[in-house]
Length: 247
Image (tube, rainbow, N blue to C red):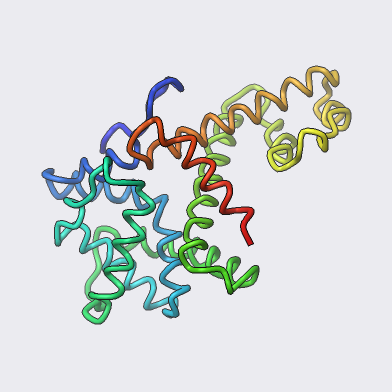
C-alpha cells in the first residue's frame, strides 16, 4: 500500500489522490489494497447518497459494491487525474453516471475483496442517511453528499487526534477538550476546564489553543489529500465547513 501519510506538517499530503492514481498499472493485490484504503474513508458518503436516491439498504449496498468493482474492472480510475478537480467531485460524478447507466445490470453476485469493507462501512453510511433524513429531507442530494463528506473528514480528524492523546502522558485531556472544538472562543469556560484538568487557567487556555490548532492541522492534511494542489486546500476547507451551516 502506498505511504499515505507524511510526518512533517509542512509537506503537502496527496494521500487520497495518490492512492487513486497509484491504483493504475499495478498488480491486483496492490490495486485492492489501494482502493480499500481509499474507500475505507469515503464509502459511507457514497452509500448514503445512493440511499437518498431511493434505493433500499440492500440495493444500496449491492450498488455501492458494484460501483467499486467497476472502478477497478472497467478502468474508470484511468479518468481520475488529480489536475481535473477534487476527489469528492470525481467520485460523485462517477456514481451519478453509474446509477444512471449501469444500475440495471448491477447484480448481487459472488462477492470478494471489498465485500466485507462494504458491509462494515455501509453501516456508517446508513447512520449518515438516517441522520440527514431526520434533520432535513429536503436538502438536495448533492449538498447532503458534501455534508456527509465533510462530517466523515471531521470524524477522521477527531479519531486521529484521539489516538494522539491516547499515546500521550495525559490521555484523559481529550474528553475534556473536544467540546472546545465547536464552541466559540468567547464561550469557552477556561476556569472550569482548568479545574477539571487540575491546571492553572492560563495553562488551560494554552492547552485549548494547542488542541484546536492541532485539530485544524490534521483536518487540513486530510483535506489536502483530496485536492489537486496545495493552493486549493484552504478553499476546499472553507467549502466543506460552509456546507455544514447551510439550510
